[in-house]
Length: 606
Image (cartoon, rainbow, N blue to C red; front, side, top):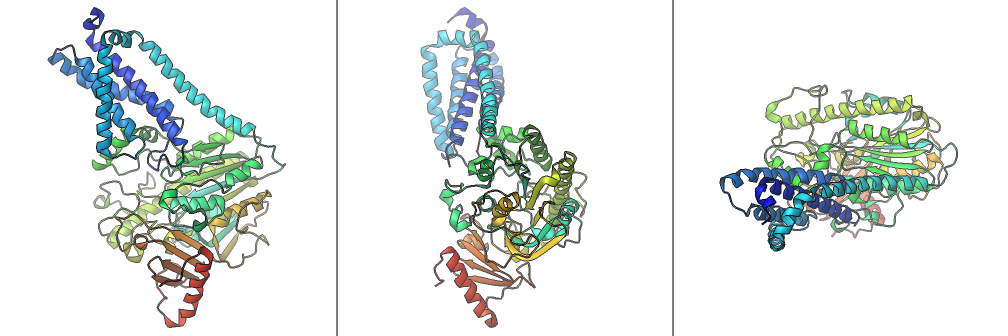
């Protein structure tokens, strides 16, 4: 062994940790980026972008150095010349495990076995060249650091170049095109807005926006969970047409033209800014057509969560009592992102899509909104992360009311930041030349229908009745309230009509033929597939698919196993009284059954 190495064992171990940390960071960053370009290769919890190549090297450098530092005391107690071999084995095994785990498709023990195999192979290779390599890792360390910096800089420039190239390739827009601002309040049920009848003042800024435009009193989403509803919102297609509900196809499929693609062809600068990284991140295909899409890496917590190491640690955090989504983007982050982007795209009309995640569980209102609608009770504080339709302990009416208070306090917080966004757009002189559309992808349950859970469990109005507000002073009269039932799937056709661009979308404009006239009654279809296998049996979605049809005033719901529900929305907007078994409504039930079958191609119930 070279004497220089024998005299500096600590330096050698630290150098090995730096080399392997940077090397694995570059590897995982590259692996994650390549997989992010392959449809369906990454899912809701491990989606990624080229930014992985900027973050991973530094993260794994710190992590591997920490592991090395933890090992150093042992080298002082047990003085042996083979500690560098031990460190190589440990770090290489760990790297192999993490690399296998990145895709999320392999089970834990398989990843562990693969990791041990990589560690064994790395030790054999290292020992075959130990004397030469143990010198090289120290001497060439500056070269490795410089190469890493080049990789990080290259990834940064590549991301910026891709956006600049897309903007430069846009055709010149027609003169006087309006901007388009599409805002989706993830998980916002309609009846909790003060402009929709809530006695609490939960949304003063949205109420003001509605007073300056059109408010649709009975708008319905095409599904009760995020991804299929957003795809309908972008394409105008319903669930049975885009088929995203199928578990093998939970991504926007090639073919349908999206709103971002269509407006790009008309010369619009397109930007997406999303906070629901589970189901609106780019791995879902929703980024298609956007020149700029900000999803991951919006916060430090999320940037760390994109690494396999921290994602595994996040699971441990939840077991130890973490109660919020790791790296959660708040409304303030979304506002900062979109306003910064608008500074860079001056001179073109813009289409900005904003997905806010603040009123999605868990409901953790910040100050000064916390406690505004009710006393904070420590005994009701969540003990773990509660998100999605996980089986939960039975909820009392008191606990449901507590959740409603916190949910509506989050509405206050979100509305406050929407007010700040509108005020800044007005200050910049662009608000009045912008088509502003505010809606939601679905609503939320709070103990209704037997406390079946939260969203994505049924198609009752708590989950499908959503707000819809449109403001555009140039063409939309102020102070109009429309009572006819409408579908948010008609938003793409509405936007293209108002903007005066070519319309390639199914459906019809919600403001046609007369701008302030009530749209004619049309059937409104909502759909959801079977939920996860371990969901409670009382949830309608756990028994198979659920489909519904609104032909106002009637709301018809059919389950895959044949159960039918019927509600009269004119007197029962919350689907409280099932009329399916009432004899005098048998003709209505039969008519709606036939109409739904004709639209979505169902077979008659047996």
